[in-house]
Length: 108
Image (cartoon, rainbow, N blue to C red; front, side):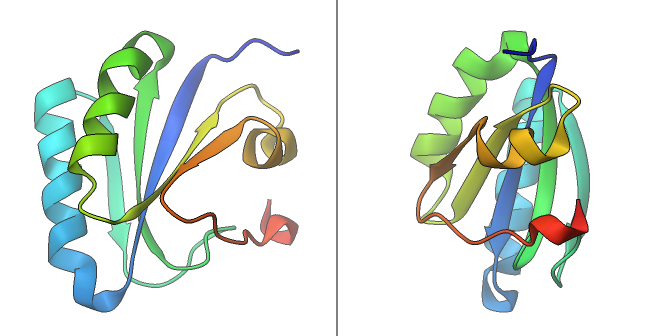
């Protein structure tokens, strides 16, 4: 297996969940001092719905993931490792908090 250099957590939301997603992402950014991406109201890249990316180091995994699990407010969160192999990162090195969604892997 390749070495996991860090992680992305993608918070998925529908238009009516924008404020909840924004609040969650900003709270995570403040609490864990991670790299918060833009909130995309429409699908972007392989992601099927609106989303926001949280980028964090492997050392933060044990703190952030339990916090997201408890604080996600029923939002779906896709978490994947960063190995440099985008396809495997989004298919093999991935797990879901909430319902699994179908990614558009052709966009990777």
